[in-house]
Structures are given as structure tokens and as C-alpha cells.
Image (cartoon, rainbow, N blue to C red; front, side, top):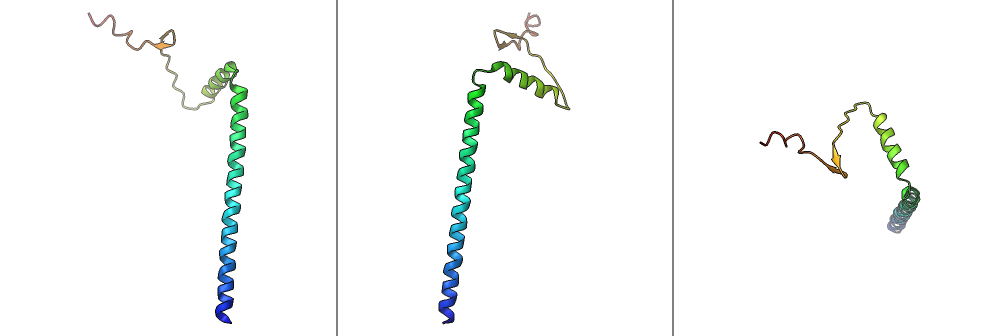
Length: 90
């Protein structure tokens, strides 16, 4: 009798563990689906809104405590990193 009771208890414990793991898996899947939907909504809303992204980037720069701003001269959005050496090469 004792062995049968222990076997029944072990079987029940195993079933509880399996059900707990399945519930955690289902919860994780729901969280991932929610995150994916949120990302899709945010992505769609920002797709045609470059001005907002530019404003957000600038405002994030303003809120930094350790600020170092480096301006890189560009020509048609191509950084001109060698402009200082042009006169020195001769």
C-alpha cells in the first residue's frame, strides 16, 4: 500500500510540474505575441514620420548628462573625414 501511495504521489507531482511548465510556456507565448503586436503598431506609426524620429533623437540628446556632441561635415550625407588633410598632403 505504501509503495502505491508513493507512486501515486510521484505521478501527481510530475503532472503538476508538467502543467506548471505548460502554463509558463503559454504565458511566455502570449507575452511574445503582445510584444510583436506592439512593435508592429509602433513601426507602422513611425514609418512615415521622420520628423518625429528626428525630434525624439534630438530630445534624447538634450536629456543626456554626459554630453559630447561631435559635428561631422558632410557632402550629400557622406562624411568628409579627410578635409583637414587635403592641404597638408602637399
